[in-house]
Length: 222
Image (cartoon, rainbow, N blue to C red; front, side):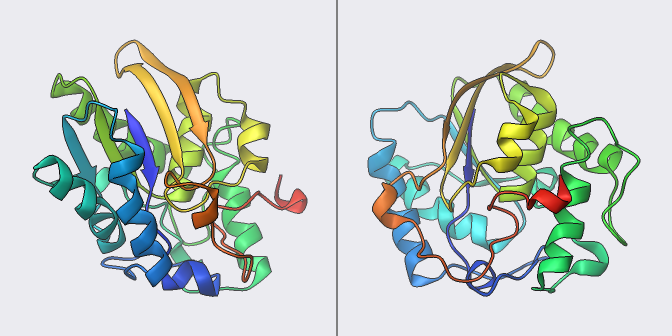
């Protein structure tokens, strides 16, 4: 299973926690990142491509879907961690509050909640269920176009070989990759982590505002 973060959005550029549906679409850079995915995965077998209900994942998946002649499959469970009361905020304090909750869950504090949003039981339960559905299809290789905080938190919680502290400190650029192997019943193992865009590091965004779902967790939130 190839978990791919969506391409850059206007909210990423502005440093906003934007987790609602349908959400922002891609920037020009985000579209270039998405367009580079088919060539980056040209040597990989791909049996299906899954997106969330947020339109940035559909836009990211479209070049790969077209290149492979596949039909988009949507699963609500792989959407971003809801920001709750922090939605549409771009200040550093909101980012810290959000990430402190999200990265408390891999450390076992599942009762902690995003202010006005989900706790770890709710988030991990729905992401587990979504990937169990993908696993039940019995396919060899599936690309799941998902979201930065969701991918990082779930993999740190559920994937063998992922160090929680390292994941909290590791940025994942737009169209970065977490590749896993295994099954919902037997568990998942880390194959590789590609923190830069799949099309190459030259497609990484220049530093501007904080990108709260993809950047390292501030030390004050760990």
